[in-house]
Length: 254
Image (cartoon, rainbow, N blue to C red; front, top):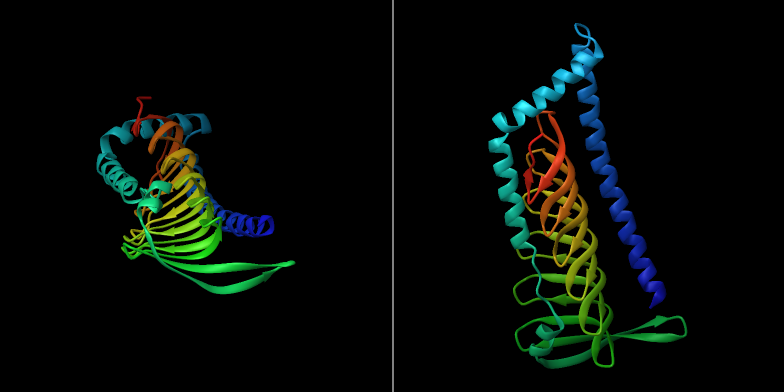
């Protein structure tokens, strides 16, 4: 199993690198546009005066003009936190009784053969993958009766390790799991076009992370319990940039 896990981790790293590169290009475009504006203004004022004016404008405009943008972003972010909760714990699997099991195939692996099973449960869920001591363990795919699907690693009958989860609402999570919850590094793509790349803990945003809103706004910074908490940077679609400290999703006064 060690080689399989390494292969999954390699795929995960490639996905993260590609997503981070995409966001880095967005940031570079922001910086390029900001540099052009600054160069244009500096024709009439020295650099120190320009920077002072830019800082003052950012502070004034944030609270005067940004209410609608922030409210839209915040509503989207809050809705997402509700939509991506997963409750597939070991207890859930135990309650969900198995009604049929069959051996699908045997896959040669080194000097042994991996046995791939299909298990049908009383509520309509289906599991296809490896077993160990009659428990889901190793790589497998779990098809939920409601249309959701998980494809990845299991450990002692629960989702654990690297995996992809496809939500019924059209969202997709790819990344680390711990005992049935999103914990570690992950990429979350929403059907709305929003995207989050960064840390998770107990199913919500936590640690360093970047949220790219569908309207073009981008926040990069610290998260705690699903909310912006700590130092961060908000880049708005109209090229404005706000750097500061957030507490429970609220930017603190400058």
